[in-house]
Length: 195
Length: 252
Image (cartoon, rainbow over all chains, first blue to last red; front, side):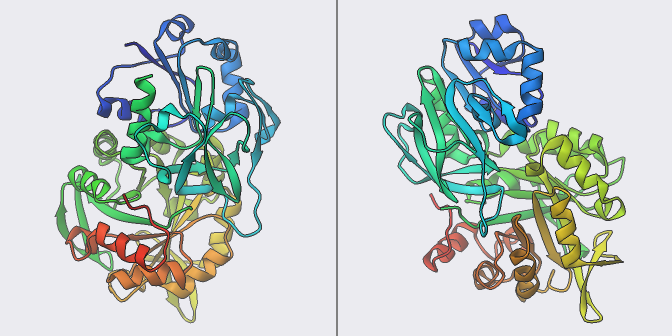
């Protein structure tokens, strides 16, 4: 199985690669369109800021390629937000796979960013949560969120309920960092690889 | 529900874990990679590695250590000690660290917090504040607590937040090493006036102390070192104890 991890200017992709190493699968870290297109699975990871990330993806033409991919794609954290229509983070137009606007958390009493381990609940068919119970804990670090929408496949609550995971056709997305979410995160990645 | 976090801290000297009392008299408590992986298995929510002898010579050793930790540990971890530039942070994040913690370098040049937050995002920038109560007030200290500054702790906490820090690691030098409990009053004062998470550090001696720091101290996370290294408190037991007392905890 060929796995492509999309290379762009997002921080800390190393954790994703080490998570793949621990699972014992090989991968290519690449921004080469041909390699990405021909991979069996594509992972679109990331930590960072939306407008900077989108600018880089546009420069490389990846903003055109990613929404057209046919194989299973797993987008995490900023990767998930970039697959939405747009983001309040520096008013960024994103790739629009999910017709959802990413919003900033606003709370008079709760701390922002939402940092730490929070529990998630599956909605509808969620093959990535196969073998996991509801209320499992995963690790979040984010100030922006995708509201609950028709693509929500797992929900989390902080300030209000929001999309912890989304799914549309071959696109799977997670707001949390599966790569550093202990054995639960590892299971979610393994479920994606087994699709 | 967002849980409170239990964070073992591993003080690193020349690639080994050490922990002293009031930052002096260090004792060897083992191999950091092995210890880190063990803590992750036992239910630690995050790890912090502090390079307490940070020098230019030690940088490569630290980066190599970070790489090994990242390979073996499946929870988030922070690296601190002697970080003073974008290049330092870049090397550590590229090696697999999830966050970095800066301390003296931020006091020396507060603009560094803005620069790091801009470059890497607030989510991976922790500002560590060492504080001591002197003459009726809490003052920021630097250089592992050896130097007093003219900056008051609460004002500094507010400033680093406004400059883009993602979290504050607050160490009470008065409580550190005493095992008499966290500095709950100061922690609560800072936590209530901050909109970013506060990691409380210094003084943990019993499970009750963690309960107090999450309730009275209003901390978002509790950090400790020696009580975990010398198995005075087992992490899993601590988390069960806290969960039973109604503190939201990740237990599996």
